[in-house]
Length: 264
Image (cartoon, rainbow, N blue to C red; front, side, top):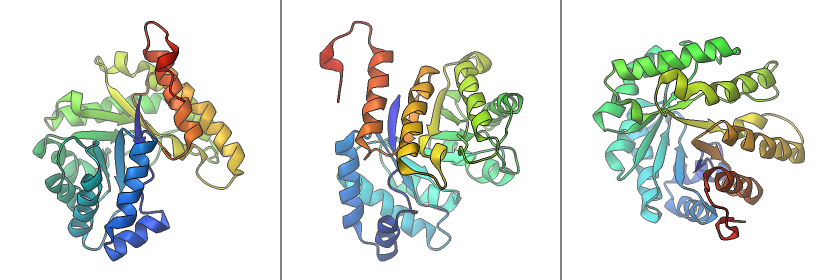
């Protein structure tokens, strides 16, 4: 299970201020701390970037890659921003992402082919809504895979995100149970070892006691690992959750146990 850091997001005041002022120093510091904490992928969540999308995404990608050679994920709904990041970036880049929404099929999915990039496919209805039953999740997984293949994408480049729902939603608990079932069944459903990703922070989005949120995230992460999740987006600066993620990987990946492989 690869650890993708979700800390570099425009919703953080520090990141928003650094982007507004085009000041690379806070971002460099954040990326250095994320890498030191165990990040294996850096998610650059710029938001839609309605103003100067090419300039701002280019600045973010250049700043991140000044201090790390880790793979990056370009997390934006703006195709212009995504393409600027793809042009500017080097090494492994993942587009995050597309869904069956017509605009994203038309303008974001083709970027993966043009730049030979991996791409996340969200299991959402064409209107952007989240499905709340297992049958629709399964159907959407087949449709997203089919759309990628029809567009000419190698299926190995697809990473499916079943979209974890906040627990505060009316049917959030039920949806997330269905997500676990889908993740376990996806390789058999699609006929190849499809990669998957989930945003753990979605689980506890919204109001609620911080300590209880942490407990629930720490409980759900091993459940995701147990059904074969291959990438997890998480707060890499939270040592408790990172420790659990690393322990899950140790327990699921070792053939012969040795304490030397246990990272704490």
